[in-house]
Image (cartoon, rainbow, N blue to C red; front, side, top):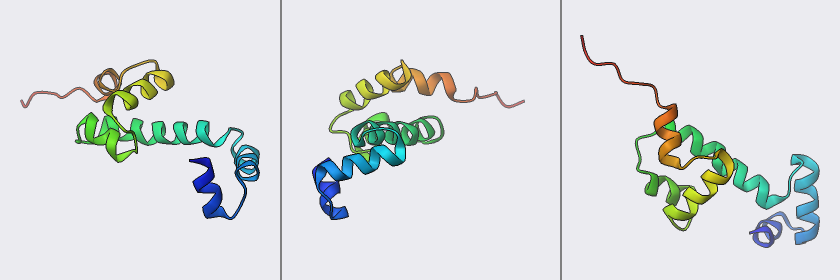
Length: 93
């Protein structure tokens, strides 16, 4: 991942990684994981797509890989995160 982004930026992998770290305070892989999880957090609670579809859209190879990354970042599985943070539905009066 770092090498392909560095190539697009016209930099070596080492220079690209150093610049990402200078700007973000994190290495490229750590930054990407955090960015993906911020996107996921919004879409888990507000979106209607399944967790497997969300994982695919965010670039994870499987729902399992997405779930593992989510647990590392939030301490919860995507399903538990969704259940805890979605507003409770009130029945019609």
